[in-house]
Image 1 (cartoon, rainbow, N blue to C red):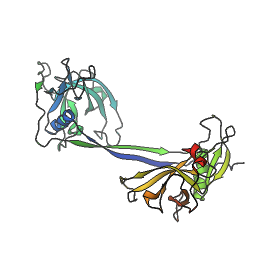
Image 2: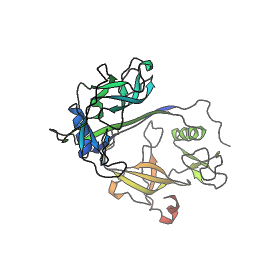
Image 3: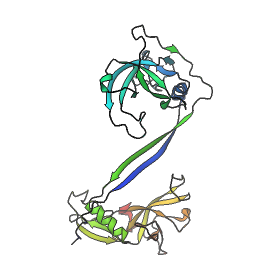
Length: 322
């Protein structure tokens, strides 16, 4: 009989963050370098339409596109949505409107922020103008936002002018930080699992239908669709089923590269979990290696797994857990 779940709901803030680095082709390089120079470039398709932001291939014909043109810093709002509560990292810290703006000379719209006093000041058809960032860097954020255009909006719009796309010191690549902040609240099954780990035990749950032991437990068998409640202690020894060698150092992770992350099938478990392998040179880690958990003094979960010294497991013993 499993113990009664704690009445206290576990909650923990979690952050998933990584810098996405990409190189730029000639079109995107010219576009971002142009923004740095307070110039907005689009690309003309084989059908004569001007796309802003520019793309390297025609979305209709898939033709390669290189015919760059300069468009205006003014434009028209085609649609919008009010954002009353800006989030961290958004263009403005005060309430603003997300807008699609078709810049004069362009046939497509650019998504950005509009600095407006309230939703009553925004409407489809509103004439707007780019507010440039004080310190340009060669990124989309060089457009700080749009603002309502108080100038004469009744005159003819300028036609896009051809542009070579050539600049001094062009932007060749960008780093786009990706971040997700959320609060994780485990259910009863994972709460029991975490409580067992704090006691240096690894506990899974057995499916009453197929009898597979899930570690970590999920509260239900994803294969049979029935609830799991019978707790089964597994390990502590296990077998490396597959692994990878990590050669890139992660931010805020105090582990020297290269190191090994592996899928480990704990004895008695019906599937493998992942963990770091240490206590052995990275190039000696292998499938079938027998390992055991290592806990730090105050750790609530294993810090890593190390070899037990046992003979390697036979492939047939773990091949169903790959």
